[in-house]
Length: 144
Ligand SMILES: [Zn+2]
Image (cartoon, rainbow, N blue to C red; front, top):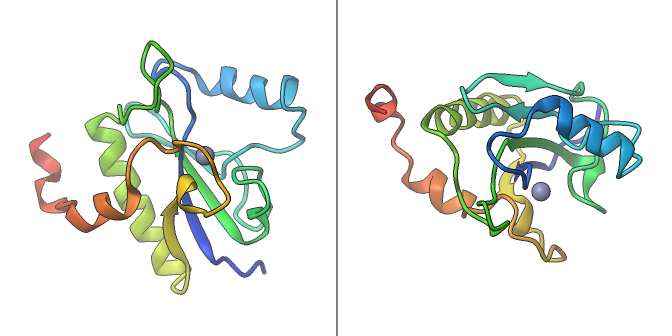
């Protein structure tokens, strides 16, 4: 079993309308990756698609992948290509629940955003993961 040290949150750095197929095509065709970039992808409607088994290594964060689980929401940039947190309410809820579930299984793993690695010069996932987790109130789930 892999020793998971980090649960890493990403955005796909696409328009929120991007499809799973288009994202997979990009990884294969442009990046030449033989495996997906993330283990889990959160769709606009809150559905979570597993792209890779957790025991497999994916390509989400260069140099860190061996001890990471990667989870991404579709979106993260605006029409001009600038970073923006454009998660839908359903994506936010699904992300929170998934992070709770993962951290229950990987109890010593730290949850962080891709950009929180010191050697990363990206905006991904376009919001401050630790601040969000600190302030998120799951009891308001039904309201949104
Ligand atoms: Zn990322």
